[in-house]
Length: 365
Image (tube, rainbow, N blue to C red):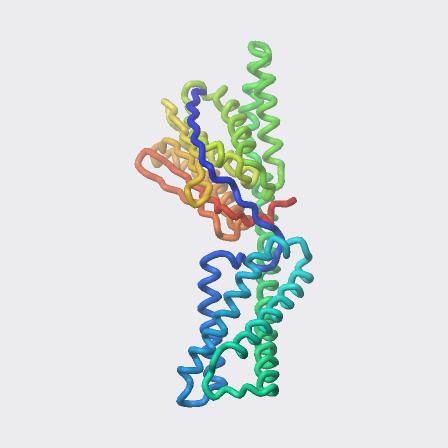
């Protein structure tokens, strides 16, 4: 097996994200936009429910200013406190979040009543108390409903993830029999002529099967997955000889990132079985691992594409493996990962993109 190995370095390092907290990622731009829109809709509802006709637009401006300040401050505080909140159970974290929201509501209400000049506003003590209690009551109802919704959504995602991973484990347990038979035949043929090479092949085979029997949601460093792939390719090179060439392009920084176990190896196995093996002259498998400027981990596997008849004869196993990987990514990364297949005239490309902040709830720790 001929190999080419090129590396590139990038100064960026992975960002770790806490696990198990029911709160969504409030630090993301998408979530921030959603919160702003919902806050503005809430301001409309409050204006329509309590404003006097003729003053609604003026009231809407003041209510919107108050609600947006309160919501944005709450999102900022919860975002900053997320690493600390992850130390607690979800029940205790929920109570802490509720207390924080009530404290922020009381603080901003006091500042608004004391420093915002509103024409005709009653500044008496009773009006002050009524203003504070009303804001706290509205905030308590909305905060409780929102936190409860986040928790139910978290529980639902965990349940769906558990069901998906149970199906994935069943798929992963189906080890290809022909690979085992071919490997054993190769080892048997090398036992007398080249015992050292046979011993190395046995070690490679055990490494590949040990990874195949691991739980599908376990996270391992990508460089360990690459070593498993090299063991598999070494066995296949004993069978295919010079027909198999592998061109590696590995970003050493990206190779430190955690990925689901046995993510890359099935793609390379498909490239060998459905790309190289049907071709009499063989071909080159190109594997690229890099981390782009946004921190996204990109994994690509290219292999020559045989004629349509060869693909149709062997396409079922290829489809099963790809569906397995797609389901695993959806379950582990909650839809944030991308899995793309591009088929051209003489090239078959599979690309995986994993986000910088991984959702590893299913990592099986």
